[in-house]
Length: 116
Image (cartoon, rainbow, N blue to C red; front, side, top):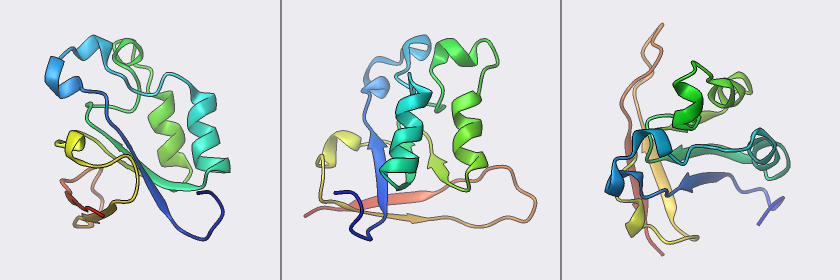
């Protein structure tokens, strides 16, 4: 999977949308794991169902260190994705389109998967 010249978009399915448990959001629990995936695994971007990359427990303490890491390394993330239960574990092609607003801090994206 790694090192074959392809770009990977890692999707995290936490089932958060099914439970709505904000403070138990999956988020990334480990900066070490996140850095490994971006630096060694060479993923281009990540996406998830939850409202933030950082777990709810961290964000309630204004700790956004994991999101800050991703954005400071010239990568991107997409939050609040839906229907991830309909995407296979591997093999799908993910298409992401979004505007590039000048001076914007965030924007909506249109994301869909082409299934194998």
